[in-house]
Length: 265
Image (cartoon, rainbow, N blue to C red; front, side, top):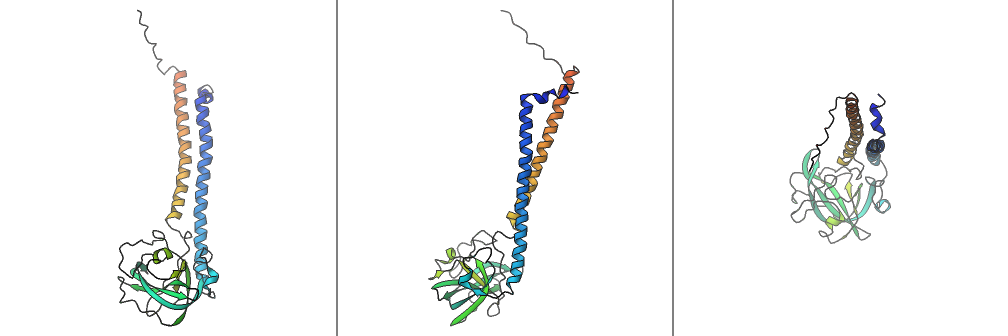
């Protein structure tokens, strides 16, 4: 039997064996790395959920002390003081499984910048006539701090061709051409909605939710481990086929190729 496997010492099989010995650890490493990415997102999602629950009971802090918005400050309760100005509607927003729209009002603060404030949610198609007017005079708002939205992320749609007075995303980039104010690169959703509207809950910071990217990491984990198994399977299959061929040749079961006839001139 030892002679049957003598082919393992040939340069061709040395190359195959080296490839297999390198490919299997690489596939296992990549699968483990993707799994760690998924587990990290699960931990971040759990931490963000726990943080959001605790934030509801914490003392609100001044807006300026919580900027810029990052994973540590997103969802934290803040306060801001100023006067309400221009009001916009944000269509295509769901709450409790129903379609509706946000009522977004710009709060002009003493700093000279305006803070987008989501005062609440209303069901149905966006209609300025349904949106209650903001309170007049000086107001102090309290709510959850949120990072600017990016169209295409977290279910935010870049709605095109919107009527005047509407915006598809809540961000300084989207609002800069709609309002005559300098803007904070953040927004706030009120703890308690105004005038019969429903309060909009804070969302988890971007990149901490169990979104499509998280489950892509889990899918890639399975793919890399499948690749490792496939490499092993193909190695054994080639080994068995080569051994069977060598065994048949040793028993004389493989027909010898007849030499080509010599043509004499």
